[in-house]
Length: 138
Image (cartoon, rainbow, N blue to C red; front, side, top):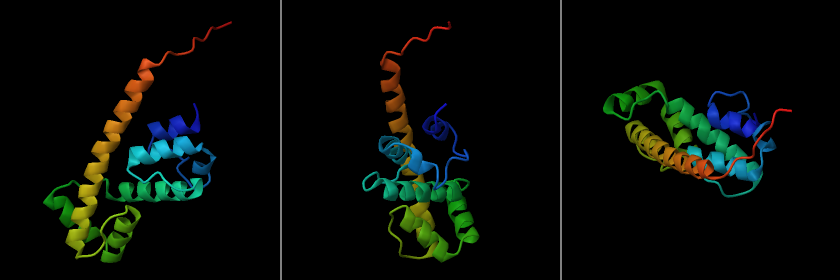
């Protein structure tokens, strides 16, 4: 299985690092960006860095539900500067108090999850329509 397929199927794969991501083709990196909600324009190096940063932010906030309880837990677990850094990496508005930053981050995560899943569903549906090459065991 290729590195791209392994990364696409597993969020905890060891290939999610600054050495392996640049080995992917530009189109593969852009595909991963679109699936994770990261901007996909720029040089391959900048896109790779942005992809890893957005993934890191999503991992950090993944355990918090998009509810009031999740907002208060996120506020309790991170200092304001860390929340501002996460908002900056996600390309979000980053002023206000801790609660406002937490709400912005959790709303962003919910939105990009939905958009990313929709994108992946469309990509897999398009791939299912294309003919596959036959393999013969000789």
